[in-house]
View 1 (cartoon, rainbow, N blue to C red):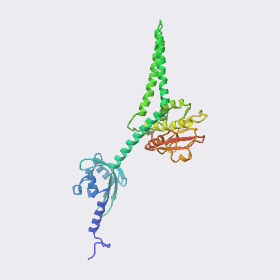
View 2: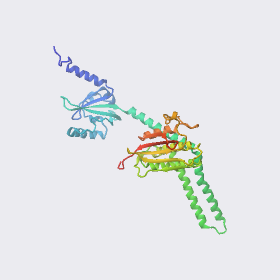
View 3: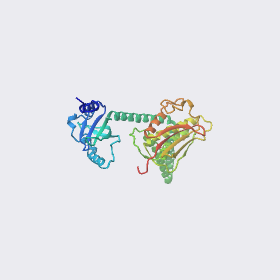
View 4: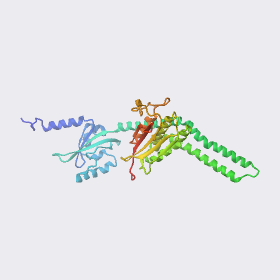
Length: 380
C-alpha cells in the first residue's frame, strides 16, 4: 500500500510532527485565521495564559488582550487585509497580554503571515517579559541609588568650598544686623539706613536659601524624570554649585556656550551630576600646576549628526596611557585618595540617556572629558 506522498509520510504524520514541534517550543505560539479566531494554541501558550487549548480554540484572539489592544485588534486586522499595510505583522514589538485570571503581563510579540490551501492565517510568537521587566526595574533602582551615593560623595569632597560659599551670606547678614543695631541706638535713628540694612539682610538670606535649595535638590532621592532640557542651562546651573570649590583653590572656570543648541531630553539632576564630576576632576587635575590661570574650560556645541556635546578641558597632566582604556571602569582612578566611582557612575547616567561619555587628549595639554546626547526635535 502506497503512502499519501512520495516521501513516505502521511498527512496524519505531518500533522503529528507539526503538533510536536509546536508543543516543544519554549515560546507561546498561536495561529489565527483571517477573522482573528484561534486555530492553534501550543503548550507554552497554555502555560503563559492559563487556558487549556480546548478552551480557546475557535475563540477570538482578542480574548487574550487587555484594553486598548482588545478594542483595536479587529480594526488592525481588517486594515491589513484591505490595504496590506502592516501595524504588527512582520514587526516585533512589546505589548501587554491578558491571562485567564485577569493578570496583565508584558510580552514580546512577533507576527507572521501563513499563506496556503487553508486560507490566510497568521502565526504569533509570544515571549513572557515579566522576569526581564522585573530585572530591568531592579537595575534601574540600583542605578538610581548608586547615582545618589555618588552625589553624596561629591558633596563630601566639596564640603569646604560649599561651607565657604554659605558662610559669605551668613557673615553678611551678621554684619548688616550689627550695623542696623548701631543705627537704631543713635539719638536720632536713621530710618533710611536701618531700612537699607533690612533690605540687605533679606537679600543675603535669600542668597543663602538659594544655595541650600540647590544643594537639597541635587542631593534629593528622586524619581528620574526625563524632560526637555537646554544643555547650556544644565551646565550653567551646575557651575553655580561647583564654582565655589574652584575659587577656593584659585582655578577659574571659563565657558564657551554654543548659541541655538536644540534641546535634549533628560533628567536635570543626573546630568548635573555628570557635569559636576567632570568639572571637579578637571579642577583636581589642575591643582598641581604652577600656572592655574588657564583654568578649566567648558564648551558646548552641536555636532553634524544632530547630537549636542559638552566638553570639559583642563591643562593638567592628562590621563596615563595605561589607564586610557579603563578610565571609566569602577574603582579606576588617577587620584591618590580617589574612590574611582565618579566616572563609572557618569558613564551609567549618560548611557541611560542614550549618549556617550568620552575622554581624549587636550591638544593644548591635559585632558578633555565630555559627553554627547541626542537632540530632540522641536515639535517632540
